[in-house]
Amino acid sequence: MSSSGTAATGTARTTEAAPSTERPAPNSRSPIHNPFPASLSSECKKAAQILDSFINPSYNGLEGGIPRKILGPAKGLVICSVFKLGFLGSGRFGSGLIVCRLPSGGWSAPSAVSLGGLGAGGQFGAEWTNFVYVLNTDAAVRTFIESGTLTLGGNLSIAFGTGRSGETAAMIGTKGVASIYAYSKTRGIFGGLTLEGGVLLERPWANKKLYQRKLKAKDLLSSEVPPPRRLNR
Image 1 (cartoon, rainbow, N blue to C red):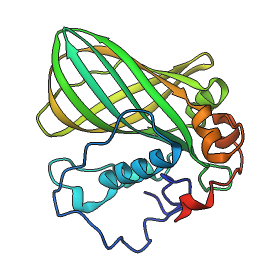
Image 2: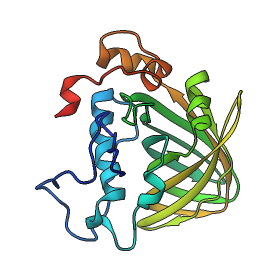
Image 3: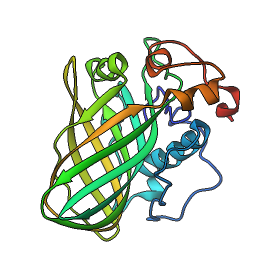
Image 4: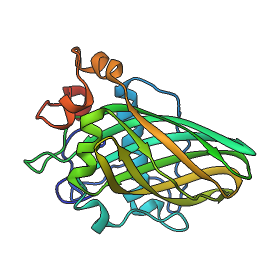
């Protein structure tokens, strides 16, 4: 990510940090991750792997990655895995987390989220997708913080086989509309053209289990609440 650090686990890690000794082979494919809601601790581990697959050069090739110029000024990230099933219409569900840039320049502690949605249009198949939604503006962050829910607006998506599909979305809340960038890496077979929406929801009960106290997304994303020490390992 940027020199400010990545935040998949709620800690400020710089892209200049020493690389892990366990790296995938060049052009290796991003793995399939469990889309069902899990503990926030598990979601953090999953998010770190997903984000790595978008920024680690070892994953480059046909799938590519997220440009540094996009991640560098990001105000927030939503990282999640989603399963989508379609026959005429479609439905999708998934889980993940959100982190936001703090005024200090560091990253907030992670907050758990879930995602669901329905689509209409001629389509068929099933696919597993890893998403990184890049929140570009403070307004995008405030939209989620103020309501704890967001509607991901219309997108057009076609995926066939293993590879990468791109989506563009708008975050629509009661306080207005804010643009984001959506990056995805998909496995599965899915054909057709569809207009669909998804709803991103906070999971305060998952936050409570990890932080040992009741914390909503706005408590974690707009303050200096530190992540539990075990997430810094």
